[in-house]
Length: 155
Image (cartoon, rainbow, N blue to C red; front, side, top):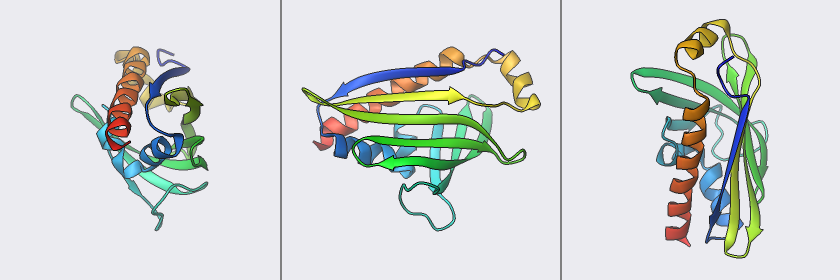
């Protein structure tokens, strides 16, 4: 399968872990950070990150558009925020995304990672034509740079 099984990147941010977490866990701001996900909205009356809370992410790559439901797995302020995207048709988990914050001499070491879990047959066909491994990893690096800029401006 051409999609990377996982990826990871980190960046040092001159801001405290709680502030960095607050930016990352506010999924309604994801469109400010991600080069692919342009909007997220909470579902089922949720208004903040908590384990089990659901949100919908709206994504684009060129002319392609898609959306995914995501379920928050971890919401530990100043330490970790994670969620898993779900294929709504199959009801299966697709990708687990994780952000960790560790204290560093300058403030926070923010890490973003993903773990690929499952892919539907139609998506596999698209992936065969448009391999996403490098693109996803470049997206992680861009996301981290944008979060860093926002956190250091706020700090």
